[in-house]
Amino acid sequence: MKKLFFIVTFISITACLNTVNAQSFIYDDIKLSSIYDFSEFKFDKYRAYRTHFEKANSKGKSLKNKKKYKRIDFINHGMALYSTKVRYNSGLFDGQFPFCTRYYVSNEQLNYDYNIENGNNILRNPMFYENGNFWNGVVEDKGEPGVNRFVEIDPDGNKIADLPYKERYFYKKHPKYGRNRVDYVSSKNPSYYAPANNENDRYYGYDHTGSYYNYENDLELTGFIYPTKKDVTNGSVLFMEDKKTQENYWVVIIDKEIKFKIKAHANEKPDILQLKRQTDFEVYSYNIATLVSHGIDTLNGYGVHMIPQDNNKPGDGTFLEVGHFKNGKLHGIGYRTKIVRYHRGYRHDVDADYGLFENGNPKNTKHIFGNSVTKYENIWDVMPIEGFSHKGRRGLTGRIKNGFETKINELKVGDIVYIESINRTAKIKSVNNTQKYITVFSDNPNIQAKITNNEKVYVKHDYVADNNQSCEKTIRVPIYKETKKHVYTIPAKYTNDSYTVKGVYYDKHVYKSNYIPAQKVYKEIRYVDGYTKQVCPICNGTGAANKGKIIKTDWIPVVFN
Image (tube, rainbow, N blue to C red):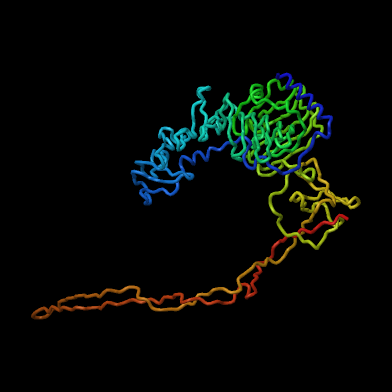
């Protein structure tokens, strides 16, 4: 069966190489997933079910911190719940409110069974519906000892989510790539859940290979999903079923968008379990992994070859080939990329091709490149001007002077021009007055982009001008008055003095006393007794103040004719 699958795939892709009408590059901006990766699952809402509360009270009265209550009533996501014999807000994961066992007010049925031994791994504490049935929580995989799975069941007993449970802050140590956080648990049983992007979407399979159903567009994508992760290679080749038109395609998905497609037959759809068995997969960090099809050097059919590469340090790059192979080389629809990361993954270089390949060489492809681009710059869309890797994200500094113009023969080498279609500025390398075009330096050092009258172009004009700034015409000035204020009192002082006067026959003793009354000490102080408005001394009431000179920038439209 495996051999037949590869033969059918190979024949169909070879036919597509010779059928121009069966292939097309896609230029729309429809995102299959707006924010998250296709297979990304978020536990946040389930943690909130266990910790969130509103309108907490005891017998209708507000709660006091650190106080113990016989019963606390509260609301959690619309559910009326209560806890008993708990202290309010005493700490984290200590068995006290809100980290405690909870019950339904309606029938006293257990809602959340808190176990203090699980600490902050609160998803291990199960939750139950109002009818007593299991709702969600971590359970042991009976078919695979040692593997725990997070499971969610609806009130009728139907499974909503079932996937391997990844402990928070799980780290893996590798002799070459070091110790890194890894959000991956190997499991022989597939996962099923609604991805974080949309609760109506569905994902079935494993971390590296599976099927993603997009509810909004009624599409199902199957194949090697892992390379589509933003931090890995941001793209892959997948089999797509269009449920609306009942047509099938092989597609290139890049940055969660369909970039290229060719028609396919229904029997070419990959089998998820078969892909898993035929692929070696190991994760070393959030952006370092190995995903290689067995016998990749001689592979015929759908496969993947993704390996880490060492540039400035181990594992700072990734090489990927995914799609259809002939004798180990891309042949048919494919996506090939090489990524080098630095600055802790914030910046990277990208060199990629996607479309149709023949014997490992691009035949009808689009090229993507980026030199030292950030993870927030979109290099994945096709650029209207060759040589530039991405559109600008920031607005233009200065003002566009419509109504003025600069003729092409007035331009000179080194001038800075603004190209509206890509929201970027560039330096002029050459001016061709005869054929009416200019060339500019681009992001690719090997390409000087040619700019003609098909583009709206503006040349930068700097000039020195007055630095006039707006100013209030009047200022508020305080009105001062002076008054005497009692500061302190010098206390009264009473002194006694005595002395003796020597006489011939007798001595005379003289006693003298002195009294100084208390004295109040006053100080003149100045205080504000209201305000008045006066003409501003800086702008003299004109409302504009000259702060000297400043360099200003205008952008003048360029006329090529």
